[in-house]
Image (cartoon, rainbow, N blue to C red; front, side, top):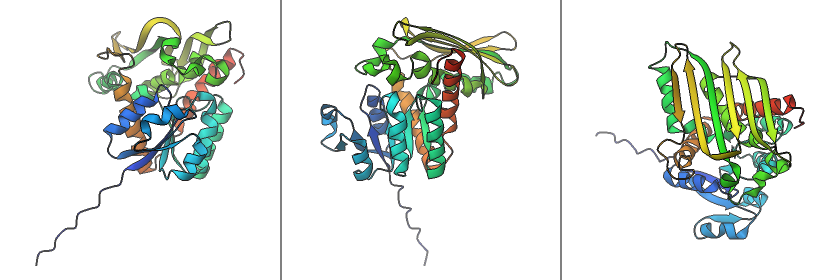
Length: 317
């Protein structure tokens, strides 16, 4: 008699709770719909009207602590204003839940370090969502450097992150409040740009910065200079008052060639590149969840650079 092989039970989907239904939430929701291994099991927002589209098939809450206690989720995505990242992430990890949090990890380095320590103590992943590292053009250029130009090292790197914040904030006007945002373009766009530098060059340190602020103390423009331990320079240009939008990475090679990754290439819709980038965010988060991989380093490294910029300008964080 021939033995029959029993089918292996399918791995159940990871039940995700989404905390915060602001302007970025639609990209998480759309990405979850494309990933059958993840299930949007619960949503939370302070505004009851924001919950209405989800009431037919998803558990809905106006209190994140109630959701953490009641919803039976396996992990959470934290998409709340920057100033409450630390408290909401802390509550989730105290409940034993892995966290994917929108950048920045926190608005102060002290809070970021405390979250990283809590993640270590509770042994849960704390993953910061740097959506630009999953951009198709960013990944294409990285692969080109690894293969075609492997013998032609990078001599310098520039990342540009230019936009008009009022257009990108939409209804989330907290971006324009320095206390809630954490400062301005350095605090909010800086982490994405700094993470891109680290994606291409590895660890870097600050060598100089110039920050331009408006009458409310919000940093609207910044030039940040970074350097790797072996001396490769990187320049980050941030602008919240730019007429239009530019998001790109330029690499200068040892032989003088300049290669560019335009993160908006092929995406004519406003914020159109974010649809595929957030799929990448959640795929990476899932991989780390299932592997139990260390996840705090990237978020803390970017926050360290934000803190270094502000300290260089004499601004306490």
